[in-house]
Image (cartoon, rainbow, N blue to C red; front, side, top):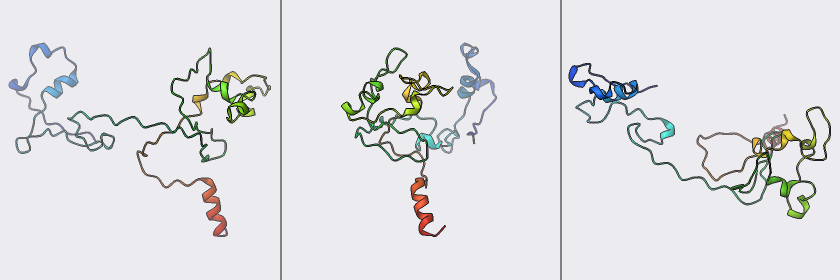
Length: 174
């Protein structure tokens, strides 16, 4: 719900002539009044993403969440989920000329770097042709694979991994 702002349409509240070319939003904001009984703007409706900070105040940004860098693969939530990246990829070059991920994750280098090899599906074209090199449609890794951070979830949830649901159903005889 949008906050309600009271306006007084009097000559004394009109914007100055220099503001006549200003955007409408600035003109409306310049005419917003403050109720005398509260001495705060009426537009104090809070947005959940603002962390309780009134909309008429500037919010300080939260610190950036730290990227997990433990090289421990996470459990997947559903079949065919792309695995997450268990390490930092800051400053990795991934563009049409070079892909830093391929240095460690190609089949030829995976054992040397103790890294999981790129899945066989990444060497297949849309037409089903198997290639010796990674398929161009699978070249930009971060379209599907993402690093993880230690950020707190924005909203709570009760999601359970599919294995937990299956195990619970098996216990209950379903």
